[in-house]
Length: 301
Image 1 (spheres, rainbow, N blue to C red):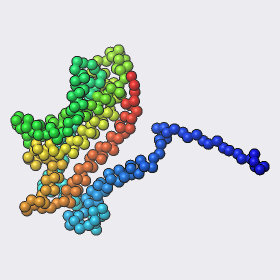
Image 2 (cartoon, one colour):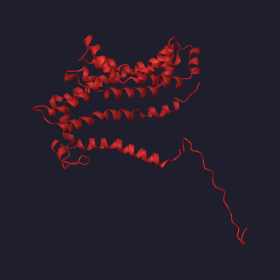
Image 3 (spheres, rainbow, N blue to C red):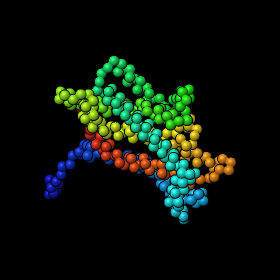
Image 4 (cartoon, one colour):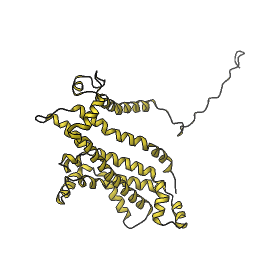
């Protein structure tokens, strides 16, 4: 009490520690994420906007705004029908390489990762070292030796020259190895064995459902890698009928620099837009498996 006045002091509310549901806020981090978002979306916006322009409008208008003529439908039709519909052939080739290559790589990664995570055998540390070493080797470093080997056995300029090398995914194998080790409790496996389940039934009915988020993740990584694969088909394939979309669109883009070639940059841009649509759709359809995987991989033995 001072001068007949009573000063009341209220206790300060204690600060709560950041949690998963209430994370700490950072203005710097928000700004950085905003810049990364803009950096990621501007190329997509440019691609979408310019896919609506004709060849003349593409070269005479501002790149980040629409032209007077809206030619998206015409561009799509021309892209699908140009040169006797070769774009659809390239799309079918890409789907073949993805289904056979990425699908096979995912199956091998799941089987190998499960075996390495749940079974002990002689030489397991050496296998781990080989897998880690293979992850560190870039794919481009193996492209030329792979070409020489396939050339000796006569498989170049065939679909097998693209499919077989993509069946091996060291990163996918390592990812499934780590995921299977954390997401499948050994107690659950032992309980299934006590109930009379053999190893095949144990894997299919008990372990495989628990591995689903990891399988989806590996499958998406392999799919994107094969879908965007450029250098391996470039050195392996000579026949345009075997090209994937990446090589086909590059051939269209080079067409303007050849003698007597027709500039079709508007079809290259429209084809690029059509190329990324399947990837976006697959990511949106499978994202729920990623969300469920955030909790499934947290079990401890």
